[in-house]
Length: 262
Image (cartoon, rainbow, N blue to C red; front, side):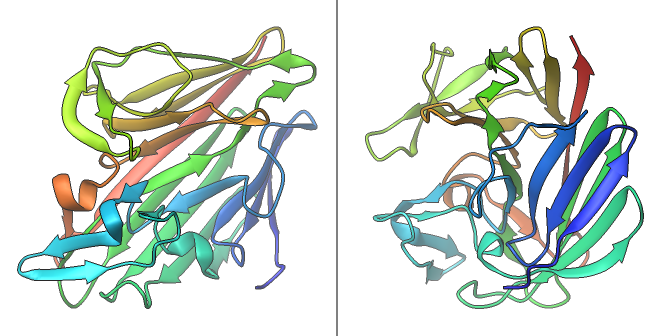
């Protein structure tokens, strides 16, 4: 794994990009305060070419059933790109473009491009999956680990969802939609007007996670961090709600984190 780190700066904001560590954002500091949980598996990693769990690690494409490694037995979780080394395509003071070529165990060839753009009051992440060969189902998402406590303030989450996916004992959506329930959550929510979740450290900082996509997984069952994960479909979506990447039409998604001091 390459230890290369890219540091982006804009105003008093600083983001660290780690292409060699799964193309993840290793840190986001605002006024010197770190907002992301630190550690090799944390920060914010891209979920691609699928998000969340695939039931039994299997998905169907036409008549063909593909088996992915069971890295969250009995399921496969969070895609393959977070385990690979990405390449750096372009870097400026406040923007990085990194790429990842899909390889085994993913059965299709394709390229993922991620653009990380920092502004003094926002971080925008854009990802696309393209292919010049066979079409295939895919998903795009991001998995940030926001520190639960920042400068002594404990995080609060605020959002309004149209529905919550009912979660089975296997942590996968059953296909039923419920009225949103109170937390703690490891759950997928539907937001037809786009993802909009407010992460607040009272008296310190308010950060809004937005995306034109309609799905978000909220995970707050760990002591150290909370996760707000915009994505292009629900968990197990390769089977239930596949989005197709074709030679003519890549799959693209974006999310913006914007913040203000309190």
